[in-house]
Image (cartoon, rainbow, N blue to C red; front, top):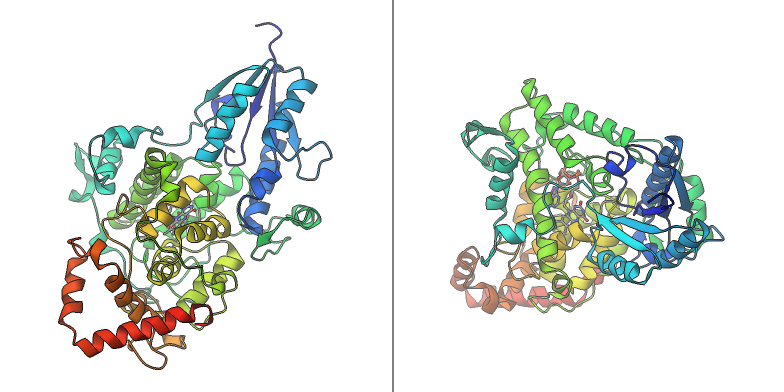
Length: 511
Ligand code: FAD
Ligand code: SF4
């Protein structure tokens, strides 16, 4: 249409410069990005998360404008900003004489519903397009597992390997196996020197000042002139390059290791760049394969890493769309207690929790095993309400967006979905943490003690958890063995463990 004028909305996690929308600037197209209170206030976010999103959005808007696109950007403190998506859209539609509205599929259920409702009310026609980011469609996993009770990640992952021909040779898995977990997952033994991850020195001082001025409630710390996370595609690519050369060669080996010497060990720290879509998952996979092709890394490391992106990331998204909105209300164990206060401060004598929480407050980051086997494990053993666990994870991590956060938290970590994601709850006593980390060596508590003074709380809480949930778990073949161990214990031992757990549960905040 000759006088058509199009408004296109770009959400804060849709900063994909490779999207077909941006190929050629067009005079009749206006792009809009918005910093709005409705997005900052639904949970208390880490200050680095808010600053990171706003900085990346601003950079993205500036880049588009430099390339000749027309951009209307709403800063949080702009007088014209009505702090609400629909109200701002209506104003742009009126001011710019827009005849058609377009948006990209949101990844959050909440926004998906909101935008569907909004377009129904707008005075112009509308259309929605794909974000061109993911390697599966929203409902692909649901179709794949139609009629099945369980969606096994391993089956999905093999499907993805075949679908994209990744790490395949003549229709068979490269290296003769689909999964090299057995060769991976060591404790960090110092055999390989730790190599500091790529950080940036972005100045987000003006954004932090604005956050303060506007009275946003945030958590965590920030060094505004030294913001370490990537805020542009160029920086994201630098981070990827640095990772594949320096840390990918040891990624698989130390994937599950934890140490007080490093807050990210050999992990990629690419989740923020990926989740904001500054880089594409296939670019990350290709970069890793490229390094391996040059002989720099073995199949164990490569496969361990590819599985995270091609497997886990897409799988979690599939589960999200297959089970929302019911998923956010699941509470299989009917857990009700409050999140202990030290999750907001890091002030606890439990060294593992102190380390994981403190670094989360300082860096807006913890790696997978810290999230799963330290903070998640403790919340599950203690019986914290999954809503509170979700709110914490959604707020504190720079990469936390509901589609990926909730399935990991409520599903994988809290087993609140009763086993859609995990075949058994991820719980452990001190044994696992002692085996995989150096935390216990400097802890106030004794990992070898189950009861008595300074007994590690994980030990009694572990048995107490199994005891409380026997009805729900005893028939699970992967947990059954633990009940046989419990049943073989002397009555006194069992009683002492439950008394100890009750004593700890009564004073969780002060542990
Ligand atoms: P690496 O360990 O280097 O892995 C590389 C990439 O693989 C990650 O960047 C990520 O994109 C992908 N990946 C790895 N594991 C997973 C997984 N389980 N689910 C989805 N993608 C995965 N990840 C988020 O992106 N956002 C979240 O809000 C989030 N919340 C989590 C909450 C809990 C309780 C748990 C147990 C895990 C959560 N994860 C989340 C998954 C995982 O911990 C992070 O993706 C990872 O720690 C990010 O750091 P990295 O980039 O260094 O990852
Ligand atoms: Fe954590 Fe227990 Fe080890 Fe302390 S002793 S670091 S609380 S597992």
